[in-house]
Length: 301
Image (cartoon, rainbow, N blue to C red; front, side, top):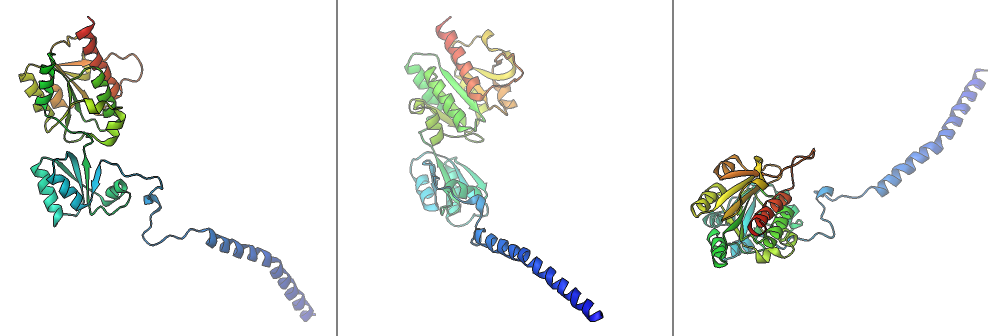
């Protein structure tokens, strides 16, 4: 009797096992299919850092130590140089010294930033931003105004870091008859290829000067007879101020605006009246309104 019961239990267990076999086979099949579908990654590969097939290196970027050294030796305009963190020996020291002698900004950045800019090409820890257009001096801008027999009209930009904004501002400045634009060396975008494209060709006909100190440049312009108006929300309404005669208009970035020191240096502060719930304007729009109010007062009073 016991033997029969044991045999019955054994048969039952055996039956249960055979019933479970298809499920086990399914699990095995799933594992095998997962192995086949799972992509094979080589050591050190990072999916986030993969270079897109349509990636194009900016034509205004130079990379590689020798290329940057030769650019520094020539008269080519360089906006800034990025150095990989930890790279401070050999030819890199020469690059930093040459850049300092020419008052070119150098910044230390992570290797990943340089990889991103160069499409993971061999950059040797050095990338330089080369200007898409030659810079001029502030004196050349004033000389241009004098040659045309017109009161100087200058646009001074601070902290504009978006190349599309700068390009749009250059386009507006050119159409409005601005004699030149002044931008800072630090914390601002230079004359990149994107800026040139956004200006729709206006950059080729616009004088742009790059200076180390905006506040000091404003003081120099004041000594030469220019009145400097700063765009800020706390100022007097733009349309009520006298903007005729030699003038410089100061416009800051959309986020930061104009710095406290620059604002204090200006002769007066003006604002654009706003009646909506949003109380700020894009930098290029604010610059356009300011510039064309000068045009209106000069030519259509």
